[in-house]
Length: 390
Image 1 (cartoon, rainbow, N blue to C red):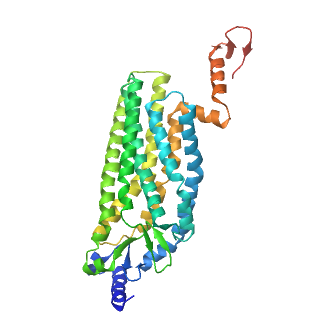
Image 2 (tube, one colour):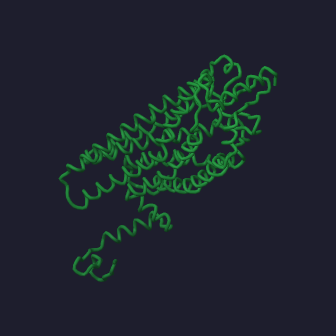
Image 3 (cartoon, rainbow, N blue to C red):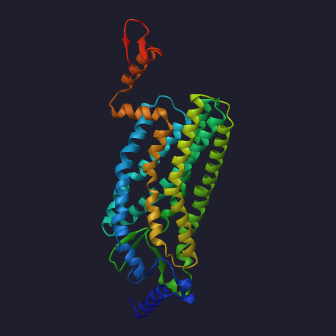
């Protein structure tokens, strides 16, 4: 590296560690790229975070939990929706697509685990890093959109219980196709700029952890030119795939609770509707509070700071919030389980290794028996046998 380059780097690092106002426009969680050696230089704060237990121990442990819980639960959910469910309805269509989105992300999680356990050293190449980043954000935004659709559909069922099933299914399929097309198209910008950075110290290659600024743009004060692609991307996605769905979900839940509150229905049916509505609201609320709100807010804050050249003192919280966003792959199966009684039944029968034919035979046998409240027993319709089911 040239003496001029080294002097500029010294100014850069002195500026980062300084609190002087005149240096504020040249600060940020970035790495300076030396075009001659093709090496990225980072400041001591960045270096400490990349070496800390936060990124090398805590984050991989979270991803291990996501993989261990998310892989079997979402695989089973897809199995139930595809092979066990006979009645196809809009909610099942949205939940099946949500499970597929989670599974497509979870299968890539071992790469994240290996990356962090290896000291944040990415050894799988630039292409694989882009694929991993694409599936990560694709999962996050598709999950938000499918949860939005599920929330709107649940409100529609409460408000319009006599809606024709066939029409709803066609609409749900069309909406799902549109969401997948939107997600695949919207993740393509992530492939248009470099995601990996080869650092000089520590001697590692990061994946989506360091924003690269060329030395030339740093010297000219035009650092925004190197971060404008991710800046515009995450600002647009935060509006289209996070803020607008949040407004829709809040509106749907408010209308749903209002409808249930004014409902004249009494008995077990009304109680079930209220219970399912509350479970759905609580589950989605937890998912947004833990996974989606912190990550999307910190994405906006992080790139807004980079745009203005201001240091991100909360970078540790930023990368942690992105990691916690992956927990939605574990929370979504609880959404299916608690909202859908049919799903619970199919999961139970699958775990007990009951075939569809056995389940149907049991259902027919059970439905052919009469229940006596006086004696608390079920009696076969032939009247020849009595069997207690309590």
